[in-house]
Image (cartoon, rainbow, N blue to C red; front, side):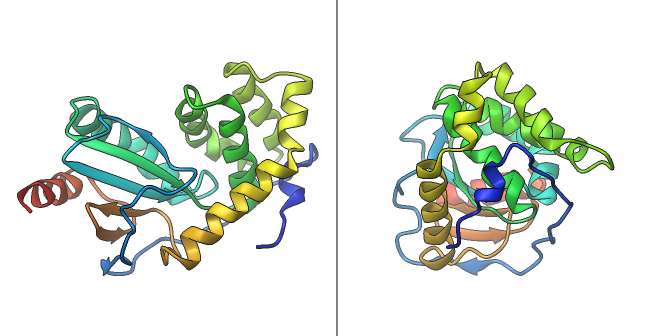
Length: 210
């Protein structure tokens, strides 16, 4: 996958892009539920149900789900130990923002990864406003996670981190056969597009019965 060095430049400039994921549910490839390098997870490690989200912090549809459904989903299923939630990174939508955002989250470390991702989703729309300077918003998000000054600059220029992200995205696209976001996998069942809490509740209940 081609390098996106522009994603890490301090002069980052973004334009809104992205398409809805509307295809019907499809069977996932064998082994899609197996742990993959780079998986970021929260919740009980041995929960009966695992929900994987292939998402992108540059995807407006992922942001809608993250901001409107995820808080209730987390409270109902993750915080109660009923579901293990796994994020697998993609760079759909605004790819520059996706690359810079996920690398920033990785720089924050495992304990603050989801904090950074959540804040990017919360502030994503503001980055797409006319006249917005996305890199300044990312700097502010980084500061909330303790990444400031030279540490932020070094994070954004980390070619090794960018190469690792590209490798993960390539694996998700070519091996896991993921081509749109958000895509959810619930105990092996692939479900495309934004999902309501009621829809996810039904799918999780079905997964628990099998």
